[in-house]
Each structure stands twice: as structure tokens, then as C-alpha cells.
Image (cartoon, rainbow, N blue to C red; front, side, top):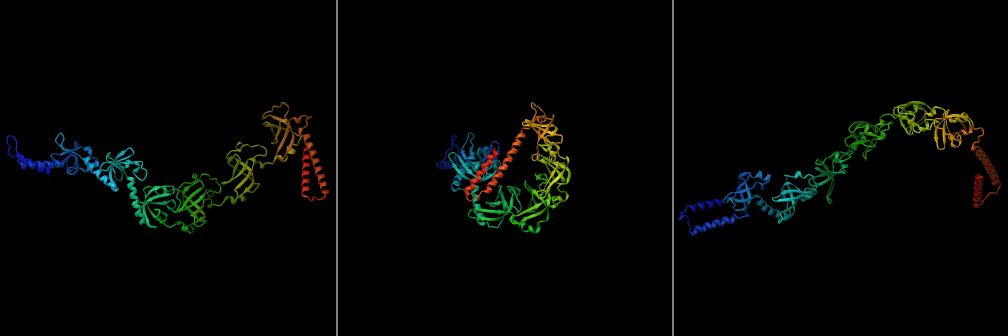
Length: 602
């Protein structure tokens, strides 16, 4: 409007009569023209804000009409992509007059300076009133985000959200609302916080929810965080705790089995503490407790089919119906098989048939069994086998303490290493037997309570030590072969199978015998209790006297004398009058002890 007035007045003045190539104005006209230019110059001063209209756009800039003597051009780099999408031809735009005229006579305008001037005033007012400000996230910078709130503002990474954020790219290009933390207009710095805005909104929502929510109310929420003990659910700005024990009537190992972060779930308010602003939530309370009818549906002794829901070291958890699980302890899997790894026999999700053996409705526990679907074979084992029976079977396992022999399906008997041979010193059974070998044995004992059967192989033959004094009497000459050499002598295997020891003192002088070498010797000692046979090469000499022979005779004589002394002391004691004093009794006991010690030394 102002521009058109100036143009009309200028045209009128140019049409006036020119004298000597100059025109003259009346005092009134001159005053009017001066007033017009003064008004125009005062309005169009640098630093003033104007609203213009977009005339055109090009790579060089955006042409804007601000009703001045000329159009202004704004460089395109002063606009972001969102602003360019809105500023089409004919759109209104607020600009600042930077200069009235450049070298081409055009007015110099600035969109950024106009936006900054308005923004600073608005931001200062918002900061004073502690009101939020909205802006567009332009991109990431070191330590946070660059946000356009009319002027560039810095959003620290720690203030982006109430939770730790690792990926800031998700916010670029988004419009966010923040609170103003700090302003330094002189340096042009503004620090904002989205976290503080979210916290204030959350507190406002929390106060509102806490006044309206009631116990027993069924509401929807969003799972925000999952821990080992439960799920935190956002129910309109307030977090409620859904404890793991309130997620299902059945067993839940971890909340993530049923809920994922971001899931919308329906919950029931089961606890409310308005003073401390705590809310307890539940999912299982939305349905009836299936354990209330468990005794009627699944009585003890009933056979059921369920799915393996979990496998542990100590047993299987089997889901009988939704919310009802029972445990098959590892000891209830098989009567006979020694199971150590349940994963080798069962898979999660597979169906199994079980029988109910115990119920505890109050604690929601059910014990199940697989092996009790069939009779206990150990209850009939005594009808098949008796102590002393001769059996034949395959070796199912070889250990360092013996061999297991399979008697029937799943039932093994143990031949202990000490029951393998009467005469051989067996270091390890694997030296003589291997798995799948067929062996014969004698049933030594049956213990159905402990589920153990003892077998013996050596009992198939008579114990040679029972007849050793007849077969190899002391003084007899025997032949054998050296089976082992030790530091104290040599062991000799006799033709009867028995093994005797030639002590180093009983070897021939200068003897250098070797393992496997045949040897002839004499039996000089037999101990059937300890199963020991003393042999000697030196005893083959006719003039040999066993070093222990005289010692044995002396020992026998000493024992005979001790027995005679004891009889004499007993008679003397009986002849004495009864001792009434405790002191005399003690003295008598000490004297008898001293006599015994003296006799032993002699």
C-alpha cells in the first residue's frame, strides 16, 4: 500500500512543468513529499520485521515482496527442508530488513534473523513461565542433538529420555517437546531437556491416575521394562508392577516367556498404595484358579497326558492343563535305568503319559511318575532268583570296583572286584573283562529295598585256601613261577594257583631271580585268616633253621609261663580277705598291671 502511494506521488511530480531541466515544488508539495519519505524511511529501517509474500523460488534464492521500492531475495540455505515444503509461491513469510539497498538497489532480507529475533523473545517468555517449547530435531552433534526451536538449541544426550538412549538417529526429523534448562542470549546458547518435560507430564498423569484408579479395576497398559522378578507396566503415565507370581497360575521361569517390551496387555489392579504411589497388577487374577478343582479333576492315582514344559537337572515339569503343572522327579522316570541326563530322553513340547502320586493344592504342587505306570520289576526279582543260584549274563558295564552283569531287562547284578578271583590280585576288572562279555556267576545276596544284587565269580570254584594246609603243608616242596618282585621279596605263583611270598631273607644268597622265572621252594608258614603263604628257597638246604622257629618256640614258652603266673595270681587273690577300701582296690589293680607288664617284657 505504501509502495503504491509513493509511486503515484512520484508520477504526479514528474508530470509537472519542467523549467530549465529542473522542476520546482511549492512549499506545501515539498513538505508533503518530505513527510512521505520520512514516514517510509522510518518504517523501512534495518532491523525491522515485516511480513512479505513469496513471489518465486530458484536456486539462487527466494524472491519476497515486502511492499518496498524493490523486491528482496533470501538465500535458500536459510531454510530447512520442512520450511521449504511450506513456503510455496503466494505464501506469507516473516522476514527482517537487514539492509535497505545492496549494490543492485535491492532490499536485503533475512529469514533466519527474523525467526531468531522472534524466537528469542518467545523463548525468554517461555523460560520465565517454565512452559515447554517444541522444535524439530535437525541432527546429531557431539554429546546430544541439535534442535530447531526457532533458534538452534542443544539437547544433551542424558536429557533425551527418562531411560538411557543409545540410538539418537530415531529422533532426527521428529518434532519433540522440551523444557528450557538454560539461556545465554549474549552467546546465543540455549540448552533444553526432553527428559524434564516427560517427567513433569508423567507426574501430572500419575497424580491424575492415582486419584481415579481403584483396586479390582481391569485396565490396559504397555510393558515398559522386564526384570527377573516381574514387568513394569505403564497404565496411563503410572508404572505398576506385574510380579512374576501374578502372571500365570502355572510356573513361569522368566517374565519374558509371556511378555515382550512394548506389548499391550490387560491387567487387573490387585494392590494400591496411594501414599507411596505403588500399584500391584495381575494377569492370572483375570481368570479363576485352576488349582481349586485339581483334586476333583486329577485325583491321586489317575493317569494323565501332558506336555513337557521344562527340563531341569532334578526332573521334568509337565503341563497337565493351562496353569496346572506337575513334577516328574528324576527318580520317578525309570525303575531300572540309571538316568543322569533327562535331555537325552525327553524334549520340551513333547507329550508324556504320567500318573499322579501326590497333590498339594494349597502350595499348588503335584508330583507325577512315569515309572509307576508299569510294575516294579524288583518286586518280582526274588521269585526269579535265589541266593546261591548260578546265573549267566552279559556284562553291561565295567568299573574300577567291579563289573555289572545284566540279569533281566534293566536289572543288573554287581560282581565286586574282591569276588572275581580267590587267588589273583586284580588291579582293575578291565584287565580280564570287557563290556558285552558273557560270564557266569553265583547270586550272593539280594536287597530289594536298596535294589542291589551281589554276584560272585570266584564262588563258582572252591576256595583253595580252605585246603591249603592239606595241599601245601608246612615243610612241603612246591614249584612255581615268579609273578612279582618287590623291595621286600618275590611273589611266586604255585601250580595250584595260590600265590606265596619269598621274603628277601629267604632267598638264596646271591640270588637274582626275575619275573616269569621258574623256582622251587619250601612252604615255611601258612596263615589262612590273612590268606598268606610263606615260602623259602634257603629252606631247601638240609641244615637250614628258620630264623623265626626259635623265636616261635620262645614266644610259646613265654606265653605258657604268663598263663601259669596268671593262675597263681588268681588263686592268691581268692585266698585274701575281701578288700573294703577303695584305696586297697586301686593298689591291687596297679600291682596286677605292673606284674603283667613285667611278664610281657620277659
